[in-house]
Length: 232
Image (cartoon, rainbow, N blue to C red; front, side, top):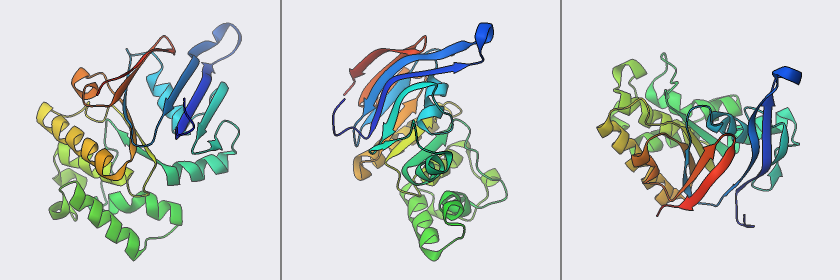
């Protein structure tokens, strides 16, 4: 872990329940991510990957340990501070795109920025249009999700994750619901964004092909980091 790390996690633990019913999911996780890194997070079902992503995304609090990002100790930050941090410094891409069906592609991309500001602005629309152009969907900006293919919907979701210029994008199985061709296109897009903007990515996946395209792989087993090595 270096001073240049944008994300630092030390001795992170997470338990659910109490007493005889307590289940410890994370058992002392240590990891760090540097600016511009693309990191794969691997592990079998039940290993704690999703719990870790939820904590890193400030959607859930850890039971113990340190969780800091960009110099902010999110372990002790208030709920309001964590909400602001999440909406301005983090981006999210999920296995299922979670686009709002009644909004156009452009409106879906713009939504996080509009929600954070409490209103829509011309600048937001312009940035959303530029992002759709960057992911190859300028010609689909006015289409609703139902009129888009699975791969196109996921590219809209990637554009949405970038609307607030996050330092880190957390991607939970972003290609898990796509065919191989669409999966390759989405990963090519993520790598291009990573290279051109310096945005860091942490990508949870079961797919070795996806992991091989990342700079580094972190493996979680039984609630702990079992391997952490450079891929590229």
